[in-house]
Length: 323
Ligand code: GH3
Ligand code: MG
Ligand code: MG
Ligand code: MG
Image (cartoon, rainbow, N blue to C red):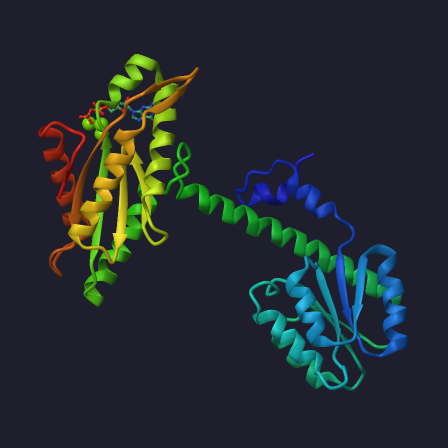
């Protein structure tokens, strides 16, 4: 059966949403330093959940940040450490900011209740706590968390897909264009260097024609591995399309960019590419370097510089770098 919620939002669903929503229990952390109340609530919660109790708010926070909890239930009347403070810490930590929180409130403590709701606490229960109401509210929060986890995960996946080249796993042209725009304006603003390299595999059409498209694809994948091997963490390696690749290098001048290009060229030409069945072929690539020269430069002028240099490298006989 397909759940309609994901489909309604344009998210392809393979049944995992339905599975996520059908979960009836979760990992629950109870923070309550009233021994009798804590023991009773833990017993109730444990009927339907994987429940843990902690008296100390700071220890609870550490456990919440480490563990995969689905819900925090916190007493607002904690001695010493204010329950509200824990709620606010949970909301501000990256690891816990999406964790649902239910507050346990003493009658007459409406001021703190309102502050809690204001800081994004999801729900509350007034003492004395009714066990059925507790379990019902817990179930609702866990369900909502599963749903929003699912959507967040799917969103992250589709963002990733939209900026990734599926054949090589490198960034794609779309991402490169946006990123280059940002880097160019940043480099102009700060007066720092920025260079790019455009690499194009030589006579790649021959690879396809001689060995078939699948071997061509394998060569593109191996090429991207060698490309990555020659980039630093802050460099951005992308496949523009076909057999054309780009590396954008922040804080890099023309001389250093040339060195990277030459290292890549040598790394491609020196070891043959395995194409299966114990066979291997020699592959070479030509590389053009473009660098940011004036504050009037745009991503387009910089790219044009690299592309012209690549054209010259091809004309001079390929398997070379031109800056
Ligand atoms: P040059 O040295 O001048 O760059 O010659 P070339 O043969 O490499 O360049 P050309 O532009 O003539 O051919 C590029 C080829 O790349 C043609 C196209 O079929 C092939 N190609 C483009 N995308 C892919 C792909 O995703 N997989 C495979 N296997 N081939 C591709
Ligand atoms: Mg070509
Ligand atoms: Mg080519
Ligand atoms: Mg080409």
